[in-house]
Image (cartoon, rainbow, N blue to C red; front, side, top):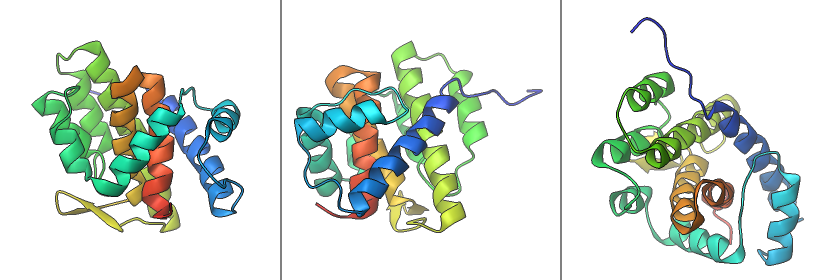
Length: 188
């Protein structure tokens, strides 16, 4: 390989981080009192990343983040092949090599929807892990397969899977925002 491949969903990952931080700041400042349709609609419209979310997605994501592990959710996912399950988990840990993971996915024959999901997860995790490492926020509060991982990236991965399963990629991104916040905050 001569050059590293560029993740076509990198911009989605960057906008995800902006969106996540906007909502997380408001959540931590007490501006978000509860998750309801009005709150979801307001934030879905305010954040820069394209997303779709509803109360059903939000409730499922919150339940899964609080009561499951990313390993369990990935293992039982019907959306991912064994190869993609491995990449999905590898992309969550602090020391992930995001460029190498992106190359592996781009060079593998996968259904387009699976490829989009895994590349979106890599882009989201890359931005969350880099942010967490730069700011020392939850950079090792969780583990994935025994390796340190930002809790926000763990929750975002669970939310991405749950939302995508319900209604596709845009719901997955909405679920990732909610999952990331629940994962990183530990709050109800």
